[in-house]
Length: 217
Image (cartoon, rainbow, N blue to C red; front, side, top):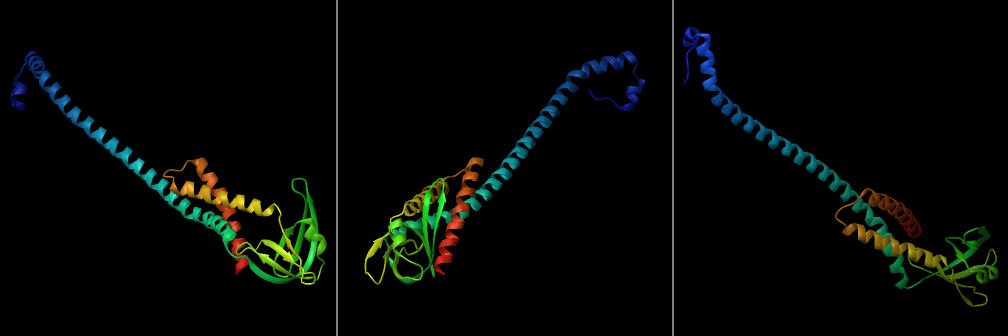
């Protein structure tokens, strides 16, 4: 029952209390009704905010992942070039020995290096001891990395095969490039630890690819 303002003024205090007592259930029901609506709207808004936050994080993660996958192409290419050149015909080069040097380290021991007019490499002691500065030699080298496979002294005609461990080391690095790059390129989600590995892999891959490019151009 609704009352006008004039009717309320004419009511006694007792009648007002009685009226409010009768209206309490109705008021309570109305408050519950609107309270439920407000709570539902708050819940909907909260879910919307959580969804938007999740979507923003997901978009950021996807962006970083796409960038990482683009950079992973670098070590993949460097590794594939190093592996593929093992099956390509060797390049024949005639060059001159410019200098020789022996270096020593605790890990690899003695290293015998020869610098040519357009290349340099490590050699086994047998080859190192047979060439002198100023000698004109024929080399057979790998296509991309220019690693020396054989050395021939034109005077004697003897072909010496260069079988150092450096070749196996480079092949090992190339396999790491290809395997890990392929693994991460197929992965749908990267952890922080994955990103650290990717950064290291890409940095070494960039150095390797720059070296290959500089040797060929």
